[in-house]
Length: 212
Image (cartoon, rainbow, N blue to C red; front, side):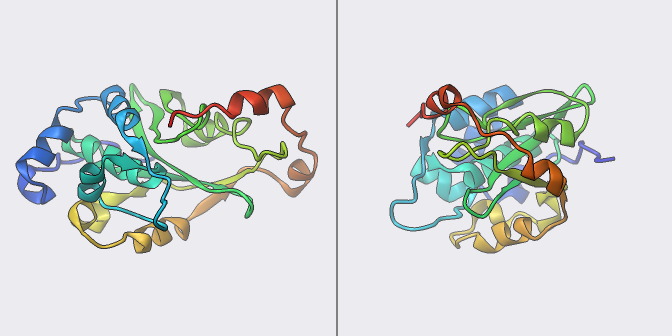
């Protein structure tokens, strides 16, 4: 069982300056955190792959899923929620997705930064993490209709890694690598995977809607 409560992250321990701290401190619940992530531009990595810290992302004003997940995790930690990431893993021809887990009234939800209509925020109505993960299953597909979600990570606790990832100027590719190689669970048998039906054209058309 994952314990969701933790000692709140203090201003001193965060390493953030007062302006950065105040931005995150105002995000008093997961709904406000999600609204804030939605207000950020999407990071299309036009100048190459990035894994920016919370500080760098706030400065740039744009984020992709990994960077948004770090912001959400920090904001929740400030409020005494354990900073937990969840890695959703796909087939090799698709991209993984990272969200931030939170718990309310003994049920799980997720905060998500994405540019598409799917893979977004999940209300805290799921009894366990696998149940939450499966809410993304039918919405996770390629342009050829192939459903691609295959496994998910155990909750990845950022508090065990200290706080350097919040403010560093370095690329956090190493942190992303650790998440990628943390314990994961498959969600399909090989027989189930072989038997999957492709997504309908109307669903793919709806999935083409983007925010940025």
